[in-house]
Image 1: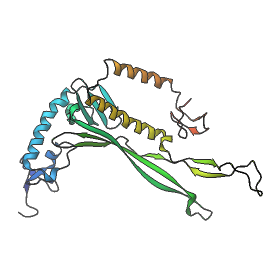
Image 2: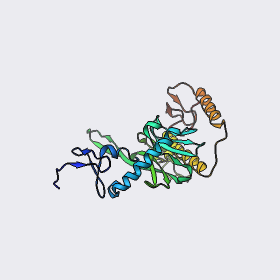
Image 3: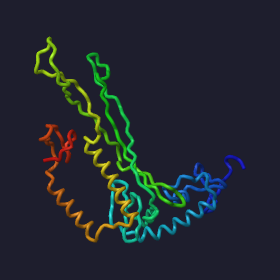
Length: 282
């Protein structure tokens, strides 16, 4: 067969358009059939036509579960981890209409582990000198960015992990320059006593950043909930409603948005927590 010969999908039999072929180990797959596969599946090229037919049959069976799914607990922001504690099911999805989106619905017993990966990158900061050139600070200063990924390990015939981002955009953190006192010692004869030497230093601790803490705590909470679900624990009846009421009351107690000064460290802030020392907004 030539490179540009017409190809047909070995699943649905439809003609495959230009650039629409998804190669299988022993055949061809059209993009429409490929869209029906699990979003966590990544081994298409080594799959046979029969493998794909088997997975599509599973996906149709899964659609029935998705229609029956009733969320009892929800975690996350853009992509959510949803629990159905009555059926002992969970799913990870962005969709609001589960029956339409058909996300993979897994049993709690399929969970084999959960962990969070935090990717860190560092960019050196510069400033303009008297000649208008970008130069490094002395000592060098850096801005850090973080991305938070949750990895749920599972027993499943078509994938073994569900890895996804907790944050929709990177979290940026610039360490604060802190004055550091030199160790106490007798002052040299040529320097007046009582004036300890200070140097500019940066404390690299992302826990100082409220956004960093938010997503790190979110990942810990999800892993804890999944471990509880796997081990058979269940939130007591009415606990979810009570938790929502408490959270709602807490939100109502937060002052209106606007700039504020931290009473602990004097830092200027706009969020619920001080970006510099972590203290809550007064």
